[in-house]
Length: 285
Length: 344
Image: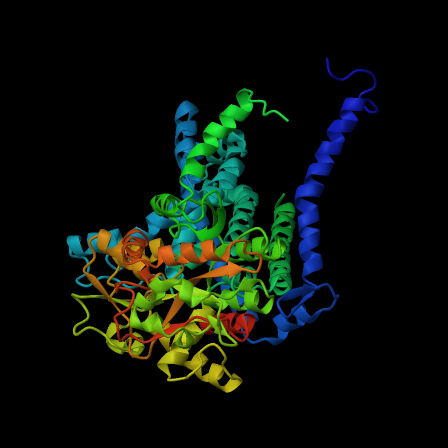
């Protein structure tokens, strides 16, 4: 027995509590705080100067490129969220209707891609999407098209498609959980009272799965908006997103304070989306 | 006093004997401390150098420019005798008095180098105030890779990247600094590393036009190769030069490499002696040793880079090369490059 004496004031509980609060503070709160601090610094002659000012934020709002790119990126991520839900919902629905071992086997199959390195998946998708890639060769072979399609070759569409493929598991899981939580009796009662399957779906299942859908949407949106690698790798010359601007500030531009400010703004957008999602979810309950 | 010959002194005498016996070799028992990039001081060369001179060469391989600076500046030049450094970086070492000028009379092999490197006053960056601060050793250019099946005749100008005929078949490099420099060369600007506001504005416009003509901007040679394999690519701005050429040819691509007439950007690594060099003659012997035709040949075979003594694919004898230099404002170029990329 580890817990000796009073559970509240013993040595071990205290140590555990220190860890439980200390680790997140050290590994999450402190780095974020340093980001926030950096965002008020500025660069001078290749050196970071720790003078506090709003200059970086001012530049974000006055320079003509940042807001349009952020807006474009948000729209892209909304589209990704919508697509993942459209594709993920039927899968989750199927999963929830499977019984016993088979359900968890299929669930495992859905989650297996998460075990694979993200970079490898992007590389694989790249060789599928290319002008002479697998997809185009397949389409040419079937005779569906007579010249390679450029629709998905290194542009925003390719980013949309790749992010959707990468993030689908994150949409399936919360929707599946919310569907699984719907009491069987409700569905049975609905059909006992004469509702068709479509009516049951529209009036019982769909409304009750909204919390899952909202969670899925905010999950996917936040993951997509922070991504800089996918647009870099499949975005070509037109798939430029906010994440890539932030990334460039830490790399080639070597302007960490401005990069930190842009990252803070991106963080605020993500927090806003999560907050909106949880409010929407709370209202549904 | 009698000499006590115990086991330990006997042993040390035995060990020292070969060195004493071979004292005909000029630098017996001396030590040369070398700092180099991987590929610039291969084991077989080091061994041969040690056999020839009798000295011991300790080589430390470094991975970044900043690492060299940290080690040389950190010890004020005292921890190393000779080090490899590119011409752009070299300037801050000269500024800081961290180098010892070379004595060309001790480098007979320098007389045999390629014409391009004969007159060191014409190699930007290696000389200052009439003194030779470093000796060119290894270089590579950033030219054009073209697919021989798709581009005929061979291109001779960077303007081909703006040719609508190749729209969507071009890979360019994702870097503002280099892209402003090479576009400046294309537009006939004399010094591509120090641009005025007005020049930058014009180049930005031209880069926006470039953007709509390229398929994608790549960052690593692997990435470019993969893009080439799964797309209809005709032209590549070859940031990684011969390294990239080799990787593509190994993968079976029917490509060739060319430096355009406007001049290709090129990096140049050189050997410099530190201010703390212990034995100048030994350090010069090292540099002279590496300037042999045999070594140059091997260097190029092994690394793919150009050497200064034997002609290689990096540059033809009459190709114009523009040695890379620090640019006026890297952050500004990077910001402008983001603006280019952000254009819808």
